[in-house]
Length: 600
Image (cartoon, rainbow, N blue to C red; front, side):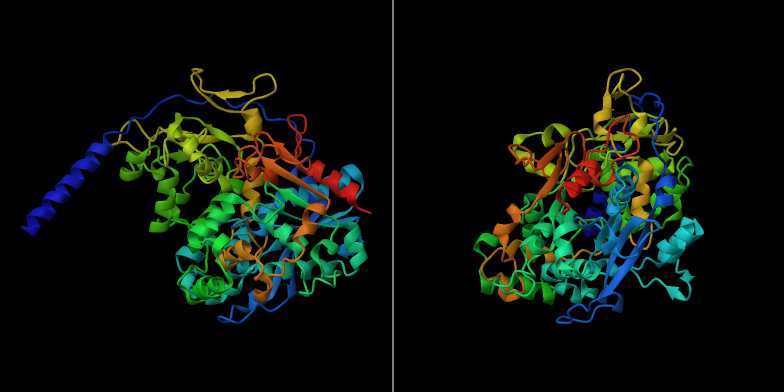
């Protein structure tokens, strides 16, 4: 009887899959031809000739309360951007800016905006600006041997062989991606360590406190906003009566990039509360230590921020895809055929590239059935019109070369617009979501469709015709207002140098501390946020994006906050600056104005 039931269920499952497979209907509206790209005032090569990026480090051992971290974690790593030539000393610069990345972001995520600020300050204002971008301690856990070797060889197969096929590089073999159970010590990578690391970087590079108050600025993107506020209100010796070591006494101003310069940001707060199952307003001292910190240390609560079906393997794949997009932009991608298709990668791409629930379940067609150039493949993973994950959206352009239709997964767009689901938009922004829809003429001929290419941000319209439409005029896919970031700038930022743009392993402890540092018992656990009243008094400038995850926080803001139309969460870091005739970058010059006005 059991055998009969099993057979019946198998037949039913096959029938349903065949039924769903019949739902594949290729075709639909096709995007219009690309426009001529905008003229550029300078090139990437011009910036590289004038600006240098180096990885610096400072020795500072991490806590060993809950295990011993790898030796590399005992160093604070940060990227330094500065003009070439002149003094090597950070303190000799006309101004210094220390930046902190966002949630699950590495220092590389701020590479475009940092190098461009240094370049524009030098070339347009005659000022020497140094930008120091923090890499949190957990970034040191990443084995980037394969990525760095691939860059040097200009060949992604080097990385694929190292991470997937057991190849050795200089006698080193990849030991596998780390899991939560492998990292007991990460329970101590909290807010206190992050604050001390920023303080260590600024005091090491600019030893004179008076000079720090005159020309050193602290800022951040996303999670880096509340971290900046915590830094300004932090007391580094724990004694509120001695103010020389207070954060606000060690900088000249604060800068926020699609964030709020305050401890409480709704979408970050809800992320931590959901993962920790803790309610900060009622969490007392005993519960905080015994329930939250103790459970993180013992592994009952996650030490690493859960990334749903994604994880370090998927993040590594995106880095490799970015290399291909940068080095071979117009070639047809074979990456999905060369990378072993693990369950983690399959589930992530399946969730990302499904037109509907039916398509998600049957995967007919799957992303592997479409023909994409390398730029187009990266675009469907990271662009705001194809990737619904709001915190990792950039506005880089649009697909070209084949049918593109509206996407209704993971939420139908009409449902996503319901007022009751407004807060969901902070995580899943379904507005303007599309998907390629020609993998071949039928389900029996998949993989034979057109080659999808990528129309860059400045190739989807111009001042006389700002709408990027279908050839039949039935669909407006996007507009010039909503496309601001160069595909090549985004690709470069995702892999360039000795670090990267994404944290493979992000610590939950910092999120727990951030929720509870504002409580009276915080100092007992090293959370010395003792000068909260001084934070709003600091000179500050902040930017919020119209389409980013700070949804609902863009009305009636104070004058130091600027709302930028058309920008998404990553555009404040990635938006092009070298084609002002099309649209000036709306972050860099205002930041430079602020720095210049507040440098004493």
